[in-house]
Image 1: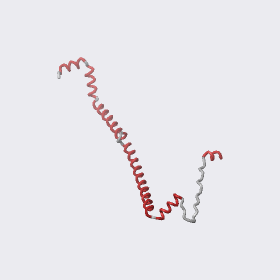
Image 2: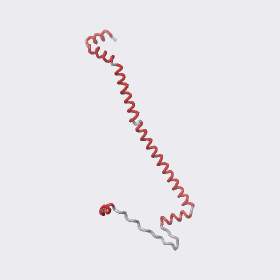
Image 3: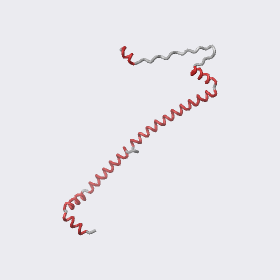
Image 4: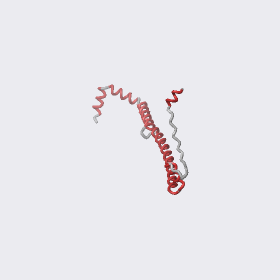
Length: 129
């Protein structure tokens, strides 16, 4: 590098010398400001990024919900499996199922089926008021 040419250039542009001195004098303030910006950016990333704390809490709540769903479905599966075993082996369970679903009756029995109640509309209730 040609130092003489650099010295001439700086002499021709005193503003560069003044700016350099100001920057050199403020180097601690600039370093502190730069580190502060870096810390703020890092904190924002830790909290709000794709794998940050907010996403972690959301995924943890979803995991808990899924775990409860799995437990509920396992219990339902066990109940249905028990019912299937009963229907395969227990004649009383088969008879009960036939009576309930197919409305079968033994000889001499009479099956009474009550009509389903009509749903009350909310507009009729509002008109009575």
